[in-house]
Length: 347
Image (cartoon, rainbow, N blue to C red; front, side):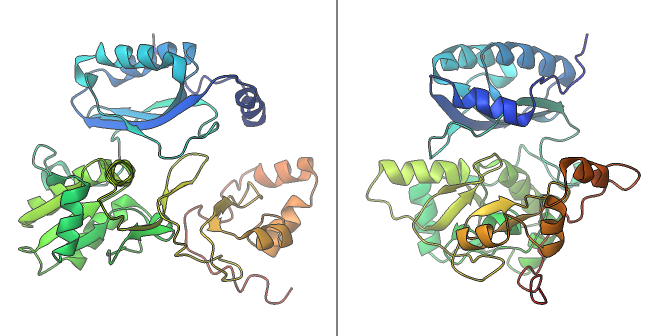
């Protein structure tokens, strides 16, 4: 019998307080695998009930085409977790990418969802073949290819590359991976015989992207094995390797980023001062993701605009009323680029 999810009982504040009181360390990691899963709902239920017992938290997507997971695990349950995954033939010896920075709260609940795809790409099945992907490069090979003049393409969204990217990388102004794939194909038009390097956070988007480009005639497609996360671990472990990544790596959990280098390559969206700290607008009806320095955070009460400051000044009852009813659409798209410098001009 399939469980009706979400199944988590605690609200966010209560869950975060519970995590803060924990007397043990957590391991934050991610993994993915493209593999045929015949009964994704059954697998979802099996994983949820096993992992919930061990206090696993995170966001996991399962589909007929595979699994994509970001989660954190109590360290003392890691061996049980690993053994449990290895009991599934489709997940056996799946490679883990461990977070660069240790943290207590990366996730506050366990969510496992069945999806049509583990990464939403909008591609037709005849536009890619995940058994025919680009060559996987380790950090040393990646650096040599960059030094050799290869074309470097960031396969992440604009808000990710804004705070950190590889030197001289092409960073498309895309809001979604679905939007970015045809954009990259167009940007690389005429360069089908040149060496192309693709990278993303942990590697999953590059599996699809490299397959897609190869399908459309690109002959020398390469991808960073394990993504930025694995690259950072390799350059930490081998001091002879240069770090060619500038700034932070955006991550899709409550941390929002991990620092790769000391470079700050972005600016506060409100005052223009150097800053690479992403926040979500304090007005939950807006929830805009934007870069805000400490000074602007204090000055604007953690909000993106005067209208949002007005909203959070209302009582909780009035705010809830604003979010209810027929019109529940957010005031802003949470990943859309907006001009925040002009928002306070006439205030």
